[in-house]
Image (cartoon, rainbow, N blue to C red):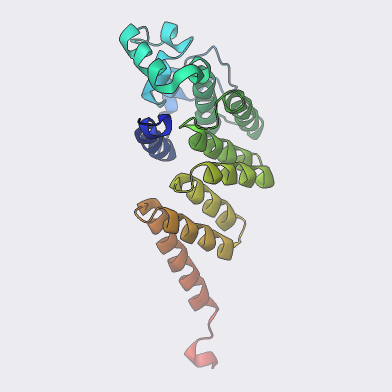
Amino acid sequence: METFRTRLRAIVTVTGCALAVLAPLPASSQKAAVYDPHTYEPSLVLRLPEYCKYTMFFNARVPGGDNKVEIEHWKNLMGPTFIHMHHYCYGLMATNRAIYLSPTREARNHNFGVSIGEFDYVIQRAPADFGLLPEMYTRKGENLISLDRGAEGVGALQRAIDIKPDYWPAYAAMSDYYKDVGAYAKARDWLQKGLAASPDARPLTRRLAALDAEQGKSTRSKSPSRAER
């Protein structure tokens, strides 16, 4: 019988990739910097996974969300956890609000903090084999890192990898973190681990090439010129 994790594999891949490449929101949408779970900012809703508009509360506020056939489809696919998924969608909106609509560091941190609580709500209630857990832990890890809580963020990313060893977005986030703090050897190590687990992950390949190029440029700049030898 097809497992629940297998049925959600396509969803994990699509949402994991899409969330990593969100385009900046238009200037006209840059308002309401502090997150309110009852504010369904259209520019943020449009950037959510398709299933979000069929979750609780969203289905009454988002156009098309009251489609009973779609609601039943996602309920059958996600099982009992679907009743909690509006919290994950709120967390994603809070994340995007932090990144794109927060004019101050205080507002940004507030919105990231709200997202953590929303993610945890679902994580704590989902079964161990729930297919979207690796994505949830990865998003949580990225946001903890954005809050300068690196050790906790690394722990969340490691949890995503423990659950799904070939989930490349977690390796990418881990490598990005170590690169940002100047730990290039660790950044490379996580990319190599990710490629060993998921050889076809082009985002990891591109990161490794960029890291090699950056380190090569740094090495050349430190080498003495011919005139100095």
